[in-house]
Image (cartoon, rainbow over all chains, first blue to last red; front, side, top):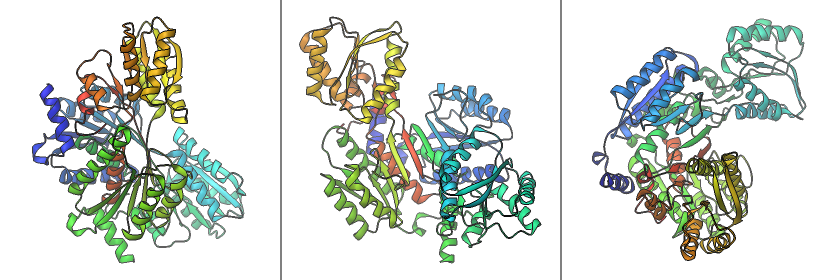
Length: 313
Length: 313
């Protein structure tokens, strides 16, 4: 035991060649999806696994995608029982049903990285990687004020009523406070194109002049744009969505004046979580803790860095 | 320009072999040191650079260590002017003098990662990596309560009066609240062995029975242990230091009952910052944001993972 200890420490400190190191297995468990944000998340998880298998020959990866919470529980139990995983990276379908199975992985001594959606009990995971909802709202609000230095009239579409949505809207409101920007109305478009089309139709019928729209999400922005086009209105100068859907990034990159910017809430954060887990297994760098992935403003200047042609999102 | 954009995106998405990618240069600027926490930080910075130069052949690293803030400013200006760095990882000597030069690096379009000590102006860095001071105190307090389930009398040594010290002590006090642990006295040992020896001498003369000491730092713990030994007292059951000095980790690993645990505030966080910067340059994983490195409890069970024989700290 003591001998093993010393060798393990020395191997890390001296960075022995990969061949001399023991193989370690990393399980990655995520919700399945073929489109939307979750589709992007699947794409970036696979990309990270493919890349890291080349970078770190001493790491094996097991990637499982689940159609519902019960399947995800079964995937994780299987990784623990038959693959003897050294680390788990998990984006939980739902918090409650996943908490026990992930705690069992932690109890086995394996490393646990939780992404985006927290578990129902604190202190299970070693590393938590999540987006920045207040920052998402703040960056969006700062862009609005930069585009309307003399103020203006806007409408806002909110997501499904959740803590996430509240944090985003509070961040936005703080950022536009005192800027002269007047929010005519704010309604829930539920992160849904059709709902947002209906909400925007209503806004357009109620307000003869709207300078800009904070759609706060790219799916909602698409619904909003369709409503504006259907109404034949030309008073709306621009629509600010968010989350970085590739069709919208392309429009920003190509200089579409209606889509001058985007704000990230990147599905690629799953890749960051997998990368950090690999760093923790292969180096002496500490990766316990909490990583809040910042929401970044995308403009025509940097849009190319956020356009991933092969991603479904 | 458009062509370049598409190629860059494709290269990332397809993970072309390293040879096909352009070389990028990462500057690392840190305070020099030969011992203590900063000495450990220098060791882990060099280790990360050595490791990453092998892992990522397409990255070049320039590591500069500065004896004072003026030298660090000059190092960074030189990296920008003559090395054309694509990214900077900086642990600022002091916040004020470094803020302008680091902002100039950000303005050049280079990536900026700031470690441990913030700049005087918000929003300059892309990534901020820092320790968790409230968590350091909380984990320390939780260990105390786990060791003294029926309560007990302790004394506490604090660091130099700073925000850092206040956050740690508040985290500790919250964790022991209601546990039956009674803090007899709390004085500043200023993260210094000699000061802590004197403070502990005074505590020992004032209190005939002390069950345990929260020294809150390994240098202070060494001063405290010397005072206990000089006084020939055997009432003190254990001393909890912190920050993970290797001599203290070894005592925990070897089962010394006076040093049953440690709490990390790892100088190796500089390695995490360099690793994440490399991930940002070489992959599509987003690494903007704020990474709070957790403070972890070290016990005989996991001490081997935190003992680095070649580090000076």
